[in-house]
Image 1 (cartoon, rainbow, N blue to C red):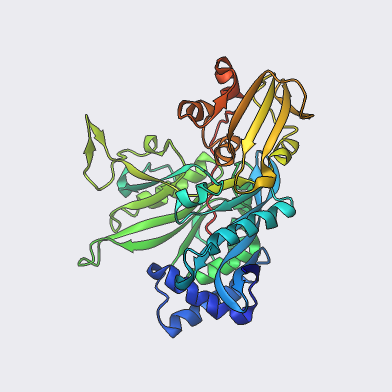
Image 2: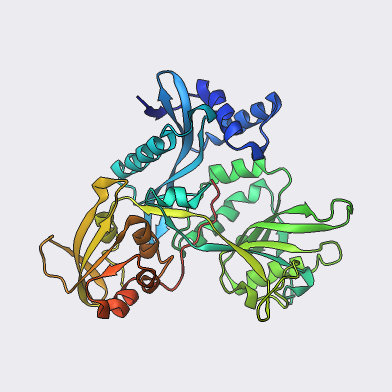
Length: 418
């Protein structure tokens, strides 16, 4: 009988052994590597949002993961979101439902704590989608020549940042969180820990009157291994609050053209290709008839609603685009059956009002929890879900009204790695 419980630090080396085998690509192979990871975990444990959990059979650790108590922006509401990371299963206990048991415990753990969402980075999106997790937005990787970035009038406010600047940097980040759904608040404790652990990372900020209005975290990446002067800059995080702050950061990168081949951006911005002079990457690929490859895109962060009824209580002041209609919403959740939901919501000028189960409804919408999770965050439109056959509408002539009901101006974004 499997049992999930917190992993005591005395068992952390067992967890690291399982982690090393589960993800050989991260290179935990020697005793020194394992000692380094253990020390990293010890330092990161200062962030009280983190906890280590394991699946045990008797005293044997079969697998485990790290849980995170995150605060996430959900249309201006700060909600508890349970993060899941570093999921690993012992090689000798694969196909014994270890990951399934861990996942179900994790979801119920956070549902009991009245968390609104679970969030995770999937090693396989299809695996987690079967458990009800919905896809978030796509992320785009650009490789731009520095000279093709806009050069502004000045970069006089740009400077390198040190550990003493982490509070101002983190304040800038959290102000950005306040304006974007899906973003996760960062703590100063964790920001300083990450700074200490990022030995080869550079921090650059735009400071005006003691306030950081934009910053960039980057590292150098070798291009041609046989050519030591062929280098790229990889931007792992970039936040800016004003067009002026963005301009100064881009001017800083533009002026690196003499020594840097490409700037590698990872961005959630779907319009970024309009910003650069030449958006083509270095692949030289051309799709028919004449589409130049500008970037590659990938799916990543996944969100899962843990309590469908709770969602509409949280969004009681949210404006669902001024729509007035009476909706019966059926959300199927086969993995977390206590979240199987049939709700009646009356929308009046965009405001939602939960009604009794037998209240009158104009139309019924039915879909599964994974697709509903993506829909409610604005990661996908209802019109697409309907066309794909993933959403059923009792009266199809209501499609456009329902699509507008759930439509958002922006898709959710998340830059927190865990």
